[in-house]
Length: 478
Image (cartoon, rainbow, N blue to C red; front, side, top):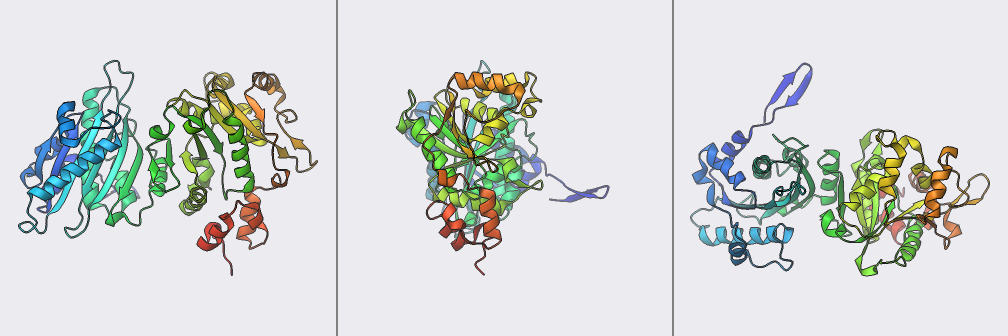
């Protein structure tokens, strides 16, 4: 990688796809196989074209026929082929063949790898643009266990050939990055878009594993996807591993709680629990087919224009400790969040929020960029299966408990608000805990940073202890 000067700025030069493949090919130790299903053999084609591929490519194959694919990699329980499960089976099978067929005694310095993808390109009607799973299992040292990088992609292009070519470049970037940037995972992640326009491809999941990635937190890598504008939303579970959004959201009833969770407080958990009790009583809502998501917007993570990664990890640590599924998005407006969910499910949706958040929804400034203004935004937000579960708020000056009946929206919005209220789109959480209404995350955070006492009682069980043990949010016992 070279640096060129432009004016007073240093600009990093991005190597071409051919130069990347040639560097890999000329490395006498890198050796492995390619297995590509569904979008041509575009990645390996780049290595063949660069020259010197005989020392790199042990085998290139594509089991396009489903019967052949099943005979090689086994059957899938759900009968689908463009899945993470299929990719894993491909990686397992192919790396095992490399180990079985290439003698370690004869090649003690070889760095074995297998690259695999299973992809569906755009359909004939151009209704579904296509997506796929791409993975690499590789050695950075012949005496170490294998490392693994798995990503999920979505195509935005509307031409099959262009999608195939983009996939080929992505595969080259992944292999090159794995071998020459594995000690800089953030840089590796950004390099996946080398020679690819971000408008052409979306990466909505990436997971690193293996000895060279022991210090990599996949939640933080999810955040990088958003920071680098590679996707609009990412999710991770209580175990800290990234979740493929579609796998969790598909045909599910969804209850979402948006907040800063800095830190998560008793009022957050009470709001969630009470809303959940109401949500599962709704028509056609099955508890077994319902997911609860704690969502944080990217703007909520920003402080003075920058995202504090440690602050993000502190919030993630606490929410995961409470067994929650977390979503980070760049959906500042609620209607965009609902619009995203509606791509994955037509089942019922619920939003649990406080009074101030509902008042903000009826603020015209959030819809000025839409050609249809507020009516377009509300059409996307309050579609037929959405309901808001409203947690009351105590007026700081009067002590009055504000709910859907007593809150005040802008006079111009009153008729619109009452229309949605009349059509049962807003339901008050009446079984609330009055003792938690005075708890605010900002005040708790301030007490923690200033070393004041009493904040522990404002948090869910076990959270205060975790903050102290791991010194989260700047906690200092001295």
